[in-house]
Image 1: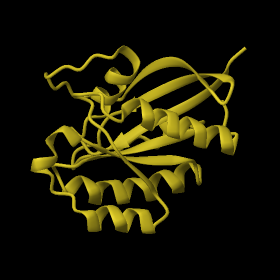
Image 2: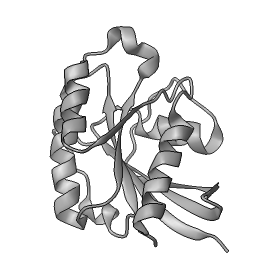
Image 3: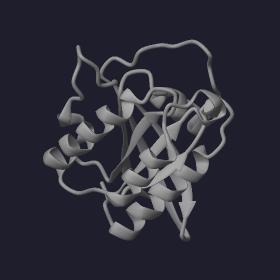
Image 4: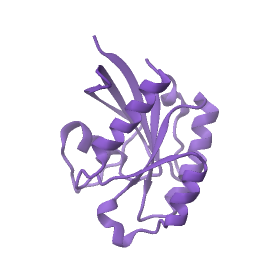
Length: 170
């Protein structure tokens, strides 16, 4: 029998949350952009540390000036990804605000900062100083590309391992 872990993806609008989930769950990437309204839920069964874990992945709508992340969707979460678009530095500021909001809503949970769009690193607005500042806050920071798949499975594995270590279960 597998254990369940609810993982949420939060971040600014158009940072690639849905694309990351699509790449991880179905190994598919679509060039077309479709805004998530509310939440989309996917699942994937994985084996980590000799345990079967059913990841229940909540892809939350993006944070922007018109829409706030619905904190009710975070209830029961085992952990989360804080997704940042490396080509848009403003998404780093949104991420800092969201991390505070998530912590206030559900407490301290395991999370990983995922710098998406590493396939476009030549266009990045993120600097090594930005990454160092996040790491100085104690944030685990990984790079990934939903488009190429680079780092996506590793990021989900890392967060799942953190959840297993913290024993945050549904």
